[in-house]
Image (cartoon, one colour):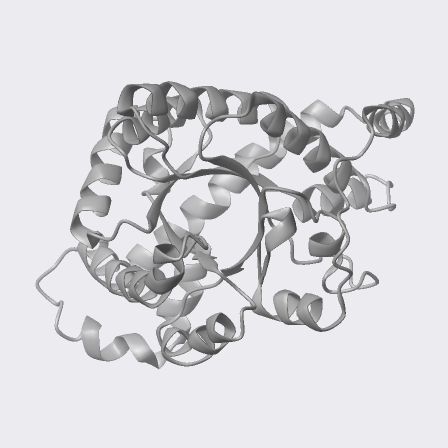
Length: 322
């Protein structure tokens, strides 16, 4: 779905070969989605659980585990990019993302090299290279955008990360000399799940933190850059499945969500703008969090570490299985 007056995009947070051949096309044809994202955890589930990959993998015995993974991932991302290309040509997004090796997250030069290589090998202009928001990642983001490579900055939990991403994109675009499509992926539901474990069960911290970051990104007004709301599948089963799409509907934004979440939103979700949220409301909420004895910055720092480790673990599992 693309809500034109809000310039709002809905991307599927899922890649799997049989799905690309069937349901993916249907969702695009019905105007429900206009982009897609992937990450190591998504590819882990696809490669390890779907029989669709067996035939290709049987031809790759001479390759290393990482080369096998890349061959499979590049095939799927290329196919997704080709299916999405008419949307891209229509200026209705049509992007699909592929993440660099998460073990390179602290190595700027290796991230840059791999990002450029993946973009070159896939050879589709509607592909975004996904880079984690680390100190090394910011360097890579600037370099990649400076040569016109679209970038999806991922694993953003803190406003300081988003600011660093936006600055890197601005500097890269200034070098490149024209607009480059970029997104800053803010993770949402994982925060509320963590806060619930600490006794705060109102499911507001993820939304308010994201709303605060969204307003900051918008205020920086970086050419081609948008906020993307990620980790929007619910963890609290008492919530409506489409909760984090509906509550984060915002101008000039993207929401990437699981397929079931997208379908639920398409069928029943409100289409009214939910962001921005008043800075005073956000501040009051986090004052309550602080008064409850919770160091929210510490919660976010741990989420960043845990997120990187989860992607590394998924990538390790893929390589070991191959």
